[in-house]
Amino acid sequence: MKEPGSASRGQVPDVAHSAMDVPYNTYLDQLDPRGDSEKSLAVRLALAQTTDTRFHHFLERLYLPHYRRYNLAGIAKTCGIGLAEFGEFWQKAQNVRAIAIVQDGIVEIAPDMVSDAHSRKVYCDRCDGTGWVFVDGVVPGMEFEQMGERKVRMCPACKGDKSISKPGDTDSRRMLLEMAGHTGKRGGVTVQIAQNFGGAGIESAVQKLAPISFDVEFEESQK
Image (tube, rainbow, N blue to C red; front, side):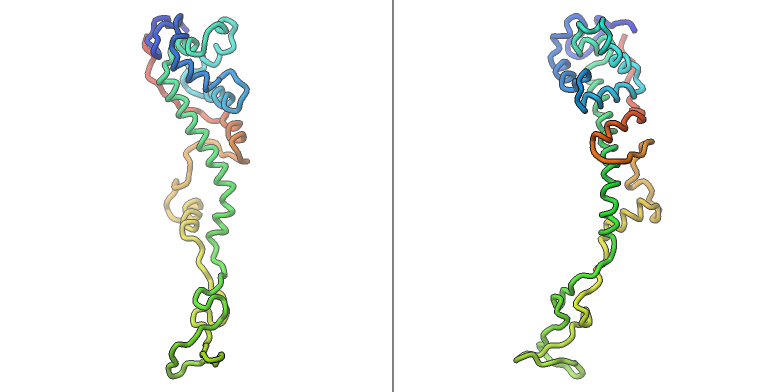
């Protein structure tokens, strides 16, 4: 690839003076593509998986002896990548990382959603789980008992059972039905990504970014 020594990239167009492009260098230093951190690994995986070959060249040049004397902004400029383009690329890569983490999270919370969707027995809120209520006024045919100075009767809500059936959480039920495809609404919680993830945690998500194609499209570089 021809090095665009005077191509208009970032704030400083000349590759030879790329050290003066403080915003670009600061941004790339924070990404730290040469580092050993989890974030650095994610950056390199994204660079390797994008369909834009300019970012492939950037990744290759990070470790070539000839480019050791270049700062990160200088390497990016030799590949024809501007600051705004690099920011857009990384934003899209971060979105894919976030989707991977969400997918892992769905696996973890699914059992809770199933549990929340079940109906269950709870204490009757009419009689506070006692099975009876005080009678304020007696009507013909009402069965009651005398308790001290007051009358009581069987709770009309729980029929003396002390508990009632509480329906499961409506939102959880709807979500589970949509996930299972029983409501005609496919895709409500379906993430459009080719790879299914198992396990949990950001480390797992980052390690599994390799099979993903980061579909990052940029306009043709200015010559």
